[in-house]
Image (cartoon, rainbow, N blue to C red; front, side, top):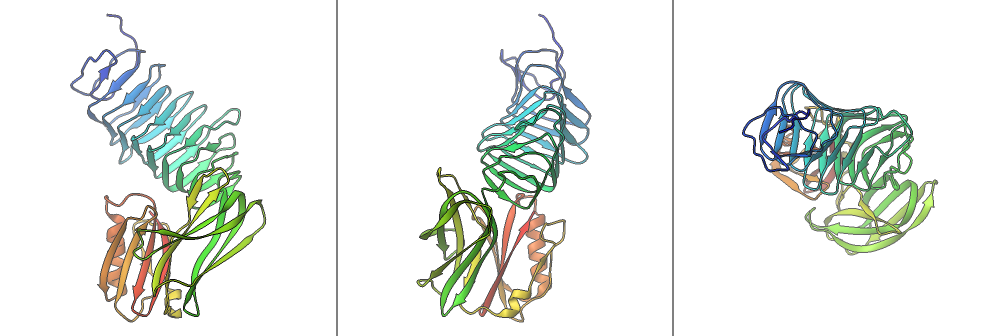
Length: 375
């Protein structure tokens, strides 16, 4: 049998269905499938033309995984502790449908590329795109990408796709991403936000709910469906407000809901002319809204291990924490600020709480308040 040179990091099978029972190294340039479980603790490199497809579970608790060839993740690729991922010199990482990559530090170097397919997901603490060469879409996000820390796009790099990005982005390149972006974007950000929402608020207007929202820019914006929910999970469309197509000027919108009950949740479904859409954050309305609740702030708004509240109403409250996907957690009969902070921090620190954006609602018998936190 002729042997070639490529590193294999976990239990796996060749395309010829040869089964391996432990983490080991074999030499070959043919495509390889891994379908087992392996934890690596030292540096590993993939330098050849053969495609490594991770069907099972590959994890690194230390060391660096350097990708200089094609790698496809259909199972899971996980980095913990001091472990990191680098994609360099014509290396490519594709997170396929159903695949997950969970990382700490992710670096994309010269001629490296990252693609996240629909229903694929990737989360990282930091992501740096130092692509070197002609500008190209070397990060394509059609699934879900979450970066809890810094996400920096280099001068020659470009972000494209139509999925969801939860991150604060510093864009020094030229991006054409047209999906949903939750977070801030400074720099180029060309096309990163088809509709940049400045504000979205709900207020009492003679017993009716008045919704006001503003956009900084719009690209191919057909308009906004207004959705209402009485439990924060199940929404129904109650109206439609036309958009302004494409504009770089600030536009203001409003809608008066005369059929609302005492309290409700609202969100906007912004729709492009081609049918693509994205959701706004959810806002909460209650008829009797006390001004003292408006002064309560959550800080920091990006979770770093501890969340604090600036104030607390002098009454029993319910805390509802809702993800942008509609999953909610309720805490009833909360009596103090200390207890509220404890419950919120326990929720956000739990390993079962996914990275992403969450809405924190504090509701009392006489008023309500809400704010957004990013984990």
